[in-house]
Image 1 (cartoon, rainbow, N blue to C red):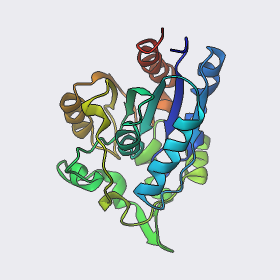
Image 2 (cartoon, one colour):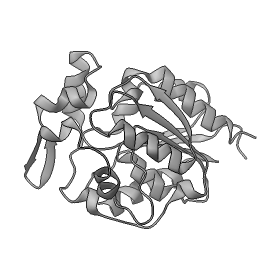
Image 3 (cartoon, helix red, strand yellow):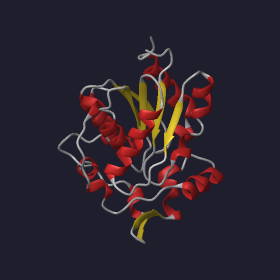
Length: 228
């Protein structure tokens, strides 16, 4: 087993792989090989395949880190035999008999969904919804997040593929107490259901950007569990 686990990130909706840029340099400096999957949100199957390619490419044992819908992706892709730990960041984590939408529908609707636009075959986050997505970031950073965000097909959350990695892999979970995109109660209930090692932080939906040191410490804890 490698002395340092590799880290593979999976982004969610209205974000892309750059949403982990405040984490990646520190992890690389500590000797981790890092890959941030850049998936197109075209289908759950293709997104899982993209995350799996990153897992296949990096060496050694792997920590999968998923933000938001990226939690669905690591739940599916995490069945890979080299994945040893899962880290959920303000994330979904549907069970085998649930879709992402099924899990989300069990909790109150969050404010961000009052600010979406279905156009050109995609679901776009309006400028008016940026505060509900990443409102604890400086204004310039909020604009950047929205500018680089990937946009999903409308039925993405209703799609299903097999795999529930958290049933067999150790999990860590970060609950964003001020989340207005994924309901914090969903995040708490999911962590309990997974038996995850849970951490709360007073953050918007993007703690990896607003509280990067906090998120780094959780990832480090997961990575240490895989070190020889």
